[in-house]
Length: 86
View 1: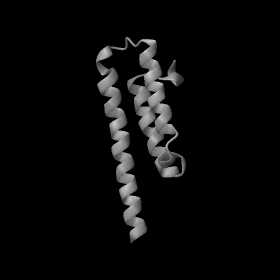
View 2 (view 1 turned 60 degrees about the vertical axis):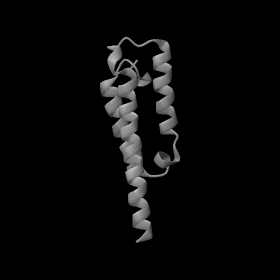
View 3 (view 1 turned 45 degrees about the horizontal axis):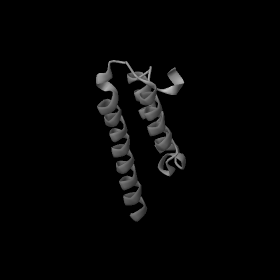
View 4 (view 1 turned 90 degrees about the horizontal axis):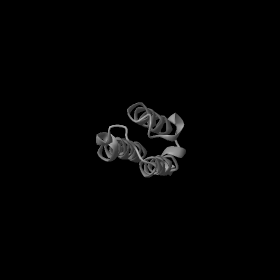
């Protein structure tokens, strides 16, 4: 039971963090109308790098998939901002 509670809590925390990630991108970049300067691109990629290196996402396949889906959403929303799409 303890293990299941811990896993559920961890999953909820990760979902919140991924929600924050998308919200943060919206807050920072949504109203720039795809007119991003180099500092915007650097900041966006630094945020992604920090999330990608989090132990929460590197140690579990399900959580890694959740991160991948969130990153895919961000790439779809901000294609000119993120490295892999430039």
